[in-house]
Structures are given as C-alpha cells and as structure tokens.
Image (cartoon, rainbow over all chains, first blue to last red; front, side, top):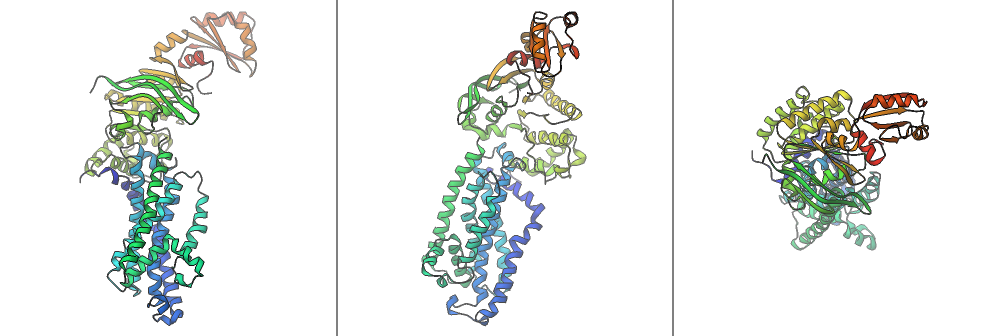
Length: 261
Length: 309
C-alpha cells in the first residue's frame, strides 16, 4: 500500500469515524427519504391522478415525479448536517480533529478540501442507496439515472461549501437549528420537489428558479426520465457548480482565518 | 544531523490585532537538548510554540526550524516535528490504537509500517493493554501519554510539548517525566513550555523565562538560580494581608526581601542564621521555612510575582 497523497489524508479520519457510526447515520441518510418515497410517492401518488401519468407532471406518474427530487433533497440534507454540526465540531477543542490534522503535513486548505470531499462521498453513498430503492418502486425510466448519481455530490458541495465557510467560524451551534428550519425546510418544500413550480404564483416561481435545490431537482428528474436536455442540463450544472465554486473560495478563506492563528 | 541548531529565532513577534502575544524574542535550541519556556499563563509560550510548530504565521522577526522557514516550508517542517498540544486533541470516540492509526495516516505512513510502529508506541506509552479501549475511558495521565505517543508516530527529530503535565496528579507526572527523559536519551531534541518550576528544573538543560511576551532571563536552571537568587530562602508565613507590613521589619536582615499577600521571602546565603535573626527581631510569623532557592525565586526576583499567579 502506497502512502496516501496529502489532499486525501484527512479522509482516513472521517472513514475510521464513519466505520464506527454508520449504523446510526442510516436513519437520516436512507430511512427518511425511503419513508417519504413510500408515503408521498406510493401513498399520495395513488390519489394524485390515481397513479396515472399526468401531463402536469411532465407526463409521468406522481411517484416517478417525486423520487428523483428526493434523491436531490437527500444529498442536500446530508450536506447540510455535515457542513454544520460536523464542521463546527471538528474545529472545536473537544473534538480536535482539525487541530490534529494541522499538526501534520496536511495544510489548512487540504483540511477544507478533504472534509468537502468526504461530504460529497457521503452524499454519493446516500444517493446510490436511494437510487436502488427508488428503482424498486419502478420510478427509474432510463439508464441516464445512473448519471443522476453525480447530482448527489454536486448538490452536496453546493450546500456544504458555503455553509462550512460559516460553520467553521461559528462560536455556537444554536444558529444551526435556524439553518435547518428557515433554510433547509422551505427549500425542501418549495423547490419543485413535491409539485411543479409552475403551480406557484408567478413571483414565487422566479424565487424557486433561484433556489439551488430546484436546479438539482430538475437535473435529477430529467435523468430519471431519460429526458436530459443539453441546454437546460448545462444551465443547471453551471448554476450548481457556480454556487459550489464560490462556496469553496469562501470556505478556503474562512478555514484560514479560523485555523491559522 | 546530530549537532547544530534545531530552532533559532530573532526578534520573533506575534500579534493578534492590538494585542502582542510575543514581543520580539531571541532564542536558539541546540540538537539533543531539552529546552524550556518557563512563564505564567499568558506569557506568550503557547503562541511561540505554535509558530515553531508551523501552524501559526509569525507577525515579524526571523524564525528557522530544522533549517527551514515555517512560512515557506510549513508542511515539510511539520512532517519532521512531533507536536504534543496543551489540550489532548484526541478523538474520544475512537480507540487508543485507532487514534494512533489515523494520525499516522495524516503523515502518509503506509499501513503495514504504521501497524508495526503502533505496537512500539503503545509499549512506550505503557498502553499496550488498552489498545482497543475507547479513549474516553482513559485517565488523564494515560490520555497525555497517548498524545505524546501520537506525536512520535512520524519518528520526529524535534518534539514540541506545550504544558505536558498540566492537570496531572504527581504520580502521573513522574511517569511522564520518565518517558520524556527516555526520549531525551534516545537523542531527540525536546522543546517544552511549563509554568511549573520543578518541571523545568527536572527536565530542562536550558531554558528561557518569559513574561508578557518578553524573554526576561535565559540559561540553565542552575545558572539562573545562581544569577538571580541567593543560595537559600527563608519563607515567613503570615495571616493573609499582614505580610506587607512585616516587610519593613525584616528589611536589612537579608540581601533582598520580597512579599506576597501572605508570605515574606528573605534571600540569603545562610538561611538558618537569617531565620534566627528574624526570631530575635520579635516578629511572630505563623511559620518559618528555610529552603534552597529555586526557579520560582528567579521569577519572583525578576517580576515581583509568583509563577502560577
């Protein structure tokens, strides 16, 4: 076994920790979206159009409409949980994870990219599990859905990077509950996840277009259905990558301020 | 590289905004020695250590660690350093050996090699029987020994220990000193900070005394005591608040006198004789103690305060 390259070395910490705790993470990353899929998709889906394909849902049945959105939302949830409590914890004395990495040849920038890589990997894992289950619900209509897995890590970075920039400098963890209630929940509900944004009043519709999760949802949905449109797809990708990129720049700066004292 | 200088600093400074933690210090650490920073909390010791450890950027001055500049070669320097921070930043949820394993991986040590080193390190730290135990269950002394063992995982040439025995009971301290002494015997250079004068006396070949960001004295423990204190000290204890008044009475009985709230120190070459003179003077302290002068007295002489104030 060769020595790990420096940028990947932080992963050994997250991996060893994860090996201990993966059981308890199953509920948030796997069970929750599964329950949504079962209740909203199969349950509510039986009412909405009686399980028939609907033109208003882009010509698909309700469960097929919801499933790809839940994949994107799962990636978002994984990312937000990790980029708040886990990042905040890792730079505090009682965890010491970042501080001990700092004493090694790993640089502050690599600590940041290492943690972001880990979050992206966790999102990929969660989305893979979800894809398998949603396929069992008969919601996957195209092999393109496999490419939809890439939506997971990209969505994760879009949310994790800017949030980590904030969390690493946060003194307390109370504001994180605000992030969950006032930021994550509305995003989850109004990004075209459970109904098409065309149902929204015109003004709000444009707000939805600006939400990163909407772009993830649209991307994921087009891939599940095998209707990936190049122009729209690239647009969504560019938007997500743009937010992630800005987030990474901000995170790099925050990590340096917090850890290089 | 068994001879020469391991760390050298000239005019080294560190400020945080308006506050200057380290205010232009000069020092040199030679290969194979135990070098100490002695001083009270807030003297600038830890800030100095973090700059030497290449995790905190200096504000000014020159600094060379293992012949390299921390501003440019931080990663290389860190790969050759062992760092034992003031707070045990171990992962409490992981086992003893997993803590060593993860840390070793930060240095890019291959798995197989690392497994072999962990066996040796656990033996060194007297933790072989605890290898699979969660760190949370260890005593303070064990955690500290594990932190030290972890700092050795990359076989460092230079080890930085920030307050290595703070918060440990006497027995744990002595075991730790013993481990540090065996490291010194193996030829590693040690730099440590402490606010315990007995620790500095026990371990350090040379040390600097720091106060408020400055180095106020430098030398071996013996040299410092000889230079700044007398051979013996007579310590008179009084009810709190009365010592300062007694100060006037004993003035002239010793080469130098100092007072805290509840104690008066008389610096003299013959403690018994001075104690007798005090008894004849009619002063009635609650207790009288004659002892050899220590680094504590050096600090007292230099600053008029006690080390662990």
